Amino acid sequence: MGLVTTEELDVLLGPGAEWEALGRVREGAQLYLLGRDISGKWLFVTSPVGKGWVLRRHVRLKVSLGTLPLVATPSLPPCPRSVDQRLSDLWERARLGCPIDSADVLWAAWQPFENGYMLWRSDVRQILVFYADGTWANFPDRWQEGMPIPSRGNPPPGRVAPVRGFGLVWGSHEEVAKRLGWALEEEKGFCATVQSFQRGFIFRSNRVRYCLDELYNWATHPSFKPLFFAVYGDGGWQRK
Image (cartoon, rainbow, N blue to C red):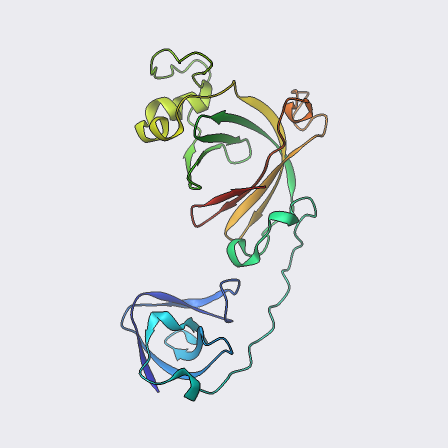
């Protein structure tokens, strides 16, 4: 039975977002229907990129689902690498995929704002901005010692203007400053356990004594609130 896709979509190796994509087909692509899964949400098809699974809502189907043959769904293969035990509570395979490397402990910096947070990763020299609405953005760290920081005036009482790389991003990007507001306290360097996945990464503050030279790890200080975040490639984040 012939089908036509209603939008560009991925053909997956199994019926679920946790499966790898076999390939992508364009809007209006011709598919041949082979069957469905038990939920009726996924259809098994022959497509221009091979046999695989597509979501029912992305195709025009002119017959009743009940008339389609059930297709046995394959078992999801295990990930080639393990998720670090310290990070597993925030791992969702459907959203993050499998790990692409082992967890590592790296030097980072953290600063809370009125409406979000900033994170600096030393390994990739990137600054991530976490907004209170659950979205995030990232910027390359272009700050160098002695570089001037754009000013946004004097902070209100009890607030702080960010400095260094955080200050450069906050001072140079109107949207960042508007959405974050002022910083609540000075930035702090800390050690983070980080593991990368196919579609994002997870990080957690680590109370080791040192992870870069002998720089003080603020995660060991009683006033430092533990950090445990999943950062998703779809533009969202979650804190535990």
